[in-house]
Image (tube, rainbow, N blue to C red; front, top):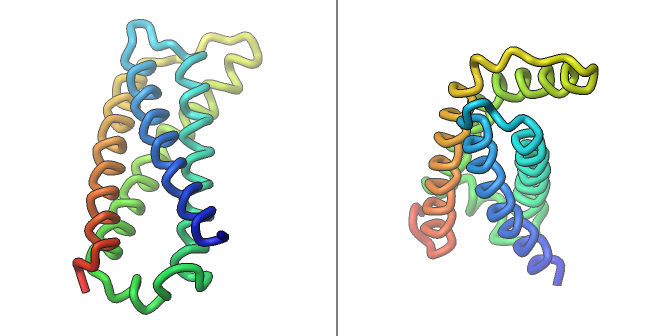
Length: 146
C-alpha cells in the first residue's frame, strides 16, 4: 500500500504542478499581470514541487520501488533528473521576483511588473519540461534506458 500511495501522490502532484505552472504563466502574461491569481498558481506550483521531490526521493532511494541501482543506471532517469535540475534553475529568478512582489502587495505597494512577461515565458518553458519529464518517466517505467 505504501508504494501505491507514494506513486499516487507523485502522479497527482504532476497534474497539480503542470496546471499551476501553466496558469502562473498565463496570469503573468496578462496585461496587466493578474498577480492575485499568479500568486495562487505559484503557491500550488511550490506545493507540487515539494510533493514531487519528497515522493520521488522516497520512491527512488527509500527502497519502495525498483531499487536505487535501477534508477541510477537508467538513462531516462538521468534525463528526467537533468530536466528537473533545469526546471529548478529556471525557477530561481521568478521565485525571487514573486516573493518580492508578494511582500510589496502585502504592504499595499504596487510592484514593478515589467519583467512579468519574462517570468511567464519561463513558466511556459517549465511546463514543456515537465511534459518531457513525463515522457522520460513513462519510458523508464517500461524498462527503456537500461
